[in-house]
Length: 425
Length: 212
View 1 (cartoon, rainbow over the protein chains, first blue to last red):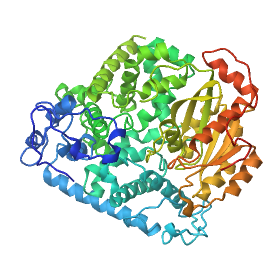
View 2 (cartoon, rainbow over the protein chains, first blue to last red; view 1 turned 90 degrees about the vertical axis):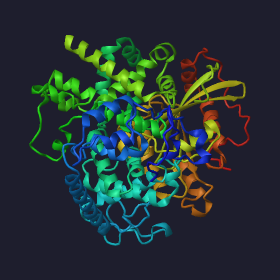
View 3 (tube, rainbow over the protein chains, first blue to last red; view 1 turned 180 degrees about the horizontal axis):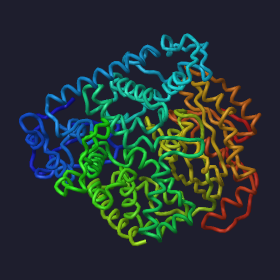
View 4 (tube, rainbow over the protein chains, first blue to last red; view 1 turned 120 degrees about the vertical axis):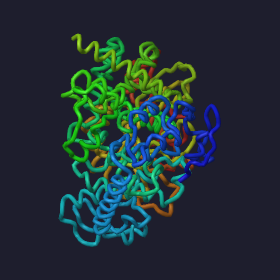
């Protein structure tokens, strides 16, 4: 991993070097708009200064910075662990080290468990062909590629079979995840991504592996040297996103968020909503990708990370760690205004308005970001869109043309407007 | 990006849908067709879309091509895109047998279930013929399948661009030969209904079940 050491230039340094793009792909990726800005972006120096001697972190200060200018690439991973609730800012270095070690051991144990079932796990390789037949029987004509990995005995356990059947799909996707980044020219890095996704899938069979998880996981693999740390960061990110990936016979989880989006646009821009409805787009299916992979496809790699951390900072809730760890000591900010400052801008509004209900609103900032994107294209959509194909095309133009911070700012405004209007109704 | 410089006039607007298993190269095929490039593309989430303008004979055509996610989880979402399609391209990977067997097990059934156009033209496309040494499905099998299900057939490579244009052109020619489909396609466009000139085929090989 490339780390620190790079000089700070005034007015924004060149950050492309952190996530190099394969030379032959330069022309195909959206340009990066993010710049590290002195006084705005959370720098390595500021970050390290935010800790007390024993390791307590001034999260309030950190959040303020991130919401203003994102995080410098040299410290992204470390900061994300706090943003996503992997660690409690109110703990010491020592406590966190212990926790980290415990988690690494835990991950190692899960990995071993998976390896026992399918030995390719952890081997530095991965599969793109089925390892077992859908009925659980071994594959008879094992092709050369799969030899050694295919299952030898009939699998009778439903859960195990379900997991095994997802492995080649994960492989097919890993093979084409962020291929424009030099990082994934290295087969070892691809297998790391595959391992983490495979193990996550084993632990979350209720949802299983769904395409798009690879887009969420890939940055973690790049940001963390240690595979277990990457896993835990991914796991925490998925806590916020996993319901989007839940599929039933008739719908996908993300449609719940689409429903909220529809509600929001109907409230803040009824004309646009009506127009979309007339075009048979009232379900907002065209926004699925933005929500499921959090704008990974609309932004350059670095810009999408910038957007994510900005959103996570705005959605930050100091009780997250305790909630995930199922601890009891949660603070109630509604009763203590001083605590409110420890929430992200977006989350704070919910805490203020109705502290009891904020669970269901959690992580909806993305919906408002989509709303803000629709708003910026409002005129063209109303004037030019004569069919859903036009809608998709107009929205397609945002690739590389969107500023993450502006989008978040707009999203907060729309959120405000929405709350006001919704309360009036 | 790209093709949206102004809105060319067109005589017909046709909706075409790409379906098939994950990783068979649907998006690559589309990219190869619309922008002459080949790339390792990320998996499609939900549905994607591209436009291509074509001139065939005297007719200016706008193709709205919808590209769907292959993973079965997305099927509840992709099913609504079959509606009103004049052409459906079923893609499989000639190096992965399961992607071929799933055509009859899954994809042909999806078409029966969700397609609203009785006369909708179906086309079978075997992709990745550049990997000839890894081939797992013979051309004959493809031809037989196409005959059984009444669809056009071609083998192609999105990577080398062999037969890529032909895939879409043959499909479009067939759509143009089908009065009920052209009537629909032109009503959505900017111009009014033109005469329907059946079966004027300029391109060399557009017979049923052909290959090359």
